Length: 347
Image (cartoon, rainbow, N blue to C red; front, side, top):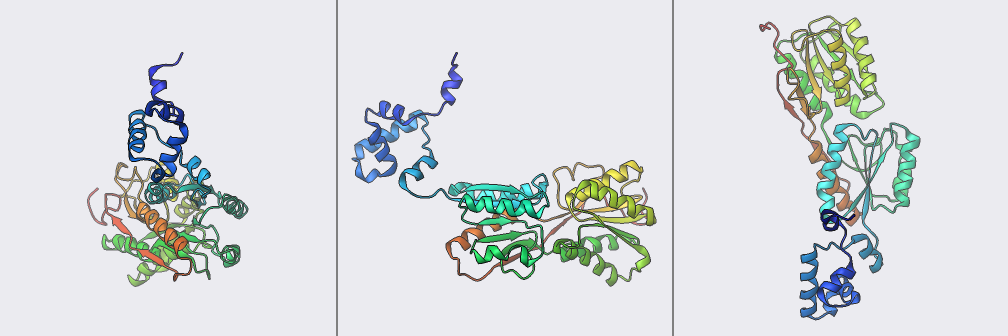
């Protein structure tokens, strides 16, 4: 049995529009695709019928009939479950969906082979360009894209030696600022759960951390670093290793949102208190960070805005392939909450 709700939600056809307007299907088609060939009276009748029936013409069918190509771009990341990447994607959608540009999403799972397959599939789909968070920093992995003149915009990091448009935060400055905040609160023992150092992003964040400590005169015997893998389980293992060596109380920094989750799991299992035993600055704002107990101090990379800028850069490159390369470096925001404490402060 068909309910009224089902009838209302069913897609209205051109035949129904034509019947309501008292015209032929061919006339409806001309109104949609070539309205100047139809009298003003007929256009008004057809548009009134479409409005009354809430008719929405299929854009795909329209472009196929016109012989045009459906505009689409590729969006490629290493871990689609990471909320930072999904937020960047939302920012891309904010700019492209209103322009009726489809987005083909690829997930490499941190595997170069999967990454290459994703790119090839996107090119087979005839994407106009690709917004990518590549997993390698090596030029040789991506030089073929430049040779094929594929418009590319990178975010998060840029492979060395390639002139791709990009948008990212100043990772070194962001981590310097976060570490300086902990230093200003009186902390003198520091740990970093880092990322794989073949990523420029991980190297820059670690460099900012170390530079702030060096500038403050903190000795190497008060600094502990363990390399994670950007993921929860890798961060869990790295935090376990670091706490076996470090002394408490400790100021600890993480390099991305999944690293923070793995780190927090260890602190909970060991019954270590934030900020009394471990002060914490997390890299990446997360939806739950302000609701955590205590609320987490975080480095905000503005992922939605990064997505906006990446989309604008790609559209610009697609429209003007010969324009100079643009690299947009954003300033991060340190959101201070309750996870850092102050040395000497009462619990």
